[in-house]
Each structure stands twice: as C-alpha cells, then as structure tokens.
Image (cartoon, rainbow over all chains, first blue to last red; front, side, top):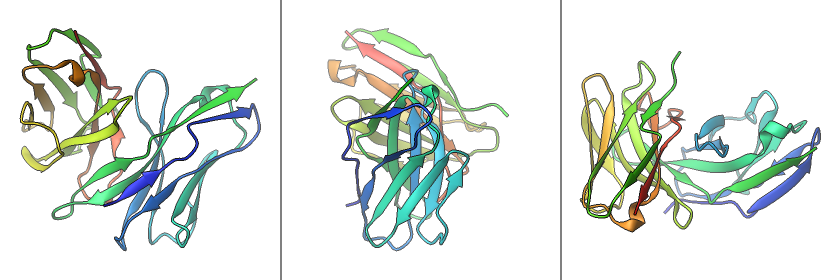
Length: 117
Length: 113
C-alpha cells in the first residue's frame, strides 16, 4: 500500500528565511504524482505544487519548489523567503491509482509551520 | 473563475440525526471527491464521483453515501450520526484523470453532540 510520511509535526522559521518541509513516500507504482497542499486555520486545502514521477525537472511555483529525489523516495517542499502568511499546516500527498484512470489522494500527517516575525 | 464551494461551512447535529453536505466543483470539472479530516485519523478518502457515477469508495460504513448531479454538483449524506463523525469534510474537484490536480473547497465542519 502507498504511504506518505511527514516526520516534522511542527517547524519554526524566521520571516524572510527559507524552510524545507520533509516528505517521504512509499509506492510500487512506476507512474505517480506528488502534491503539496497548505491548510490555514480556515480549513481550506490550498494546492501549492505538483510533481509527476517522470518529470525530470523539479517543480517550482513562485516561492515554492519541490526537491524531488526519486531514488530516495523523497519530495521535500522548499519555501523561500518565508512570510507571516505562510503559517499553516502543510500536507504532502500522493495520488494512488485505482480502477481505470482514476485515483485518490493519500495524505501525510502534516507539518505545522509557524513563521516568526 | 469560481473555486470549489462547500455549504454549509458549519453544522451542529445531534447523535442519530442525518446530515447532507453540498459541494459545487470548479466549472468544467467533472470529478468530485470527498475526504474526512479528523485529528486522530488525518485525511481519509470517502468516495469519488465522475459524471454522476461513483467510481471509487473508501473504507467507510454504509451510513456515508453520496451522489452527483448532471451539473457536477455533489452531495454527501451521513445517516444515524455518531459522535465520531465530527470532522472537517472536504470536497475536491478535478478534471478527473488520475494525474489531475485536485482543488479543494473550504470544507464543512460538522460537530455531532
């Protein structure tokens, strides 16, 4: 079965500094997708970034980048120049393939990030 | 472009009652998935609907059901509520392929008393 592991329950970072949130995954599939979501206290899950298993380049979206190391099965999220509004829970997720061309998301337990002014 | 809309945002129900939650996906998206989020179990997949058909179902009892309408809007129903059903219920919309990015709504926070 597929599994996502986030080993950092909580992280602190100083405003304007970079921070890396760890994510490791376990799958026997050759083709898979990895996602990062941000969940502020309001509850909404905000899509941040996606990496496909066959993508050769690490994904980037503005201040977010995904450090994808396939051999190590890790997909760490890097947030550059942290802002106070980045304080939230962050979830790493993987698409588990189901019947046909369908799938469901498997989530890690999340990392709470607090940005200090 | 409007995002995923879930209603209501908050609900308080009594044990034994039933509840219906609604999700309107992003225009053009035909897939709607539902997830339950609790502090103890984290985020768990409930089911997915595509073009009015349930394609996949998670490991939840039959008290949890859903449906999707021709305009892709989806409803989720929980009957005979239990205290353990208290959770944030999140709906995600996508185009539907396995690699498609999923966009979530703000969720419905259900409290069962």
